[in-house]
Image (cartoon, rainbow, N blue to C red; front, side, top):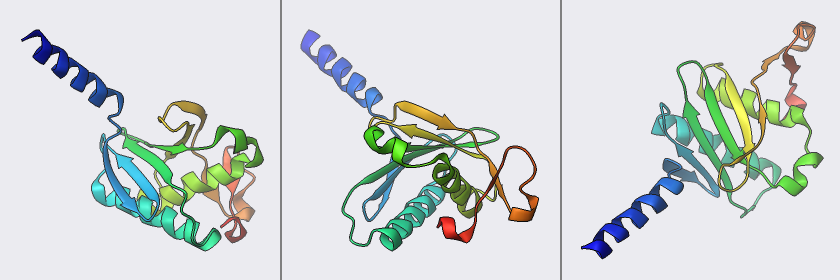
Length: 150
């Protein structure tokens, strides 16, 4: 009896430690989703990133992992990154990513981006900045994204 209870406790502990949510996958892009995000939205994200990767790095076989959740007023997109290469990529690239997901999947709603390790533990968080046209870029807390960014 004690061994059965111990086995159940171990199984529950292991499941709770890795409960990233349900998963969809397109190519090498996997998106875990939960807490207010639909399978359709997660699939759109996986397709969006897979297409972007195939345009910029055709034939890539490196796995890319994301987790997306939604609160009442915003979306949290967690993206696994290589911490050793993080300083080589400017913040504007990450703001462009959250803006792309915002516009393509969540009708322009705020998408905060959390850069994480491969267990979705936070390394850095970037609050959403709405992308604007260049002529409107004078306002605070706005990022200019041009077609050259993609």
